[in-house]
Length: 189
Image 1 (cartoon, rainbow, N blue to C red):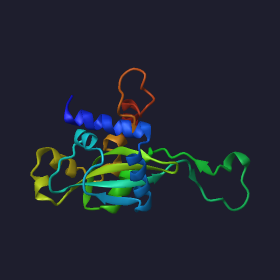
Image 2: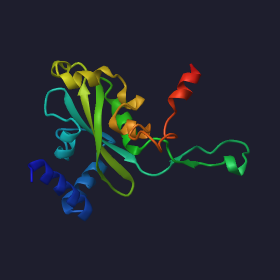
Image 3: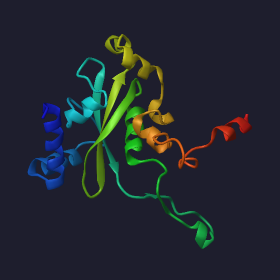
């Protein structure tokens, strides 16, 4: 068994058993801000699988997102009961929302990917891997340079989580309704 595989298993065991270290970690994270820059990834094995490398211009940001449905403000005047809903689920996943919030705070960075690190009763925590657009070590890297060329990746659904929300993970028979068909796009032109 390799080192990273062992690290991944340890992280999963901590989460399943709600170990003391895991609970203390969550307690600390709750006291911190909603978006915090982190020195190194909490789950290094997962971060490496998603493209993280410890080099200049690559940072990790932990984002806290509130769980549950989103509440709309109460509308003025009368409404039909069927139109009176106030709690609606978002069309985006909480992970995608976390990526967008990180991208909005760090404007000169581009989102590479993100992964789950924990949750408590009210919040979910994600770590977002980000690349500095102006860093020479990133510009000279073959893979990273292609990613920083896609400006606003998180907002356009070009990250791994965004593609999942757009229905791009599956193709072929049975997924006809997951995204607009090619013919429908041609008719619009």
